[in-house]
Length: 474
Image (tube, rainbow, N blue to C red):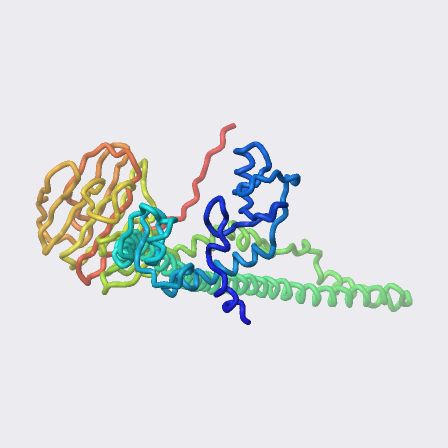
């Protein structure tokens, strides 16, 4: 007979503790053979201050009665069976349909349970009504959890997009770094080749000149040696022969006057100072045509989803919507805006922007604390061009319309932070456009916004490589 079939012959009453009237939990058996839940037995003994049986009042000599393993196993099996029956909608005690709900015990019961002593004077409701009420309560409880779940999924999607964007940024940045350094490598390799060629040419010229002078000396030495040898031979000849050849010998010897020995020409050696002097500086100065400097570098992490920056981060143009991470630095909903990567909190700073033929743009500065995820009413000073109409806007004053004689093509923005001034001027005509005055108290970032397809570009500054000579004091 299977365990399920065996449990059919056991009723819930057979497995109930006489104290708590519920299914035994960790049942113990007393010497009188009565069984109780372990907690019920201990609680009874503490109340009575004696070890008497709650049923027959017999005093137990054992203060730690043993656990009844058989009864414990039966109770566990019965509870499993009961849970299965409850899940099937059948009362585990009476095998009747569970159609009521006891509000006092907060459990479903059958009609027989309702009339039993256990549920005397209890309040009941139809089980379907209670289930519906509880379903509504659970639904209401679940709603904020569902909203939280969706919020977490959205955040996870944002983080995953950020992780993917980090990979893309790394790949793009690595490629551009390699391309830039490849230009440097090529330039330095060519610079090295030219300088080594100049060294070899100088070596060849000066070595050839010295070789030619050595050849002249060799011929002179050979002729002089020949004359000396012939004179020495005559000196050892017979007296009569020597006297006979004496005049001719003297004449030959005197044909080689004892002039001053030739000296190495000036500048005969390699001019190492020319080749090595300030070598690094000379190469660096020659590199100025290869490199560029921009007073403002645009920060792609602040760029809205409808702008694209150039590879050198100095030019911005408007494009179709892109999928970009919604990191805290990025503008939203100002999808056409971007900030400079460096903010200014002191000193004087100036940058030139080529707006060209664009008739929809905005230039200015934005405070570090300004909100980037909504409207920009505070901490924002700028001039705008909307369809050729120019206006100046700031947080503390109404818009004004500066007088502009001709369409602006290049605009200079100057921030004098310490003096509290933000100036705009026409770079082509060198005329003033507008000045904001404000006591700046925080870091200000250059702001650029493009509203049409024509690009805006931060102009490069001219690079000057000049050593500073310092006069020493005696």
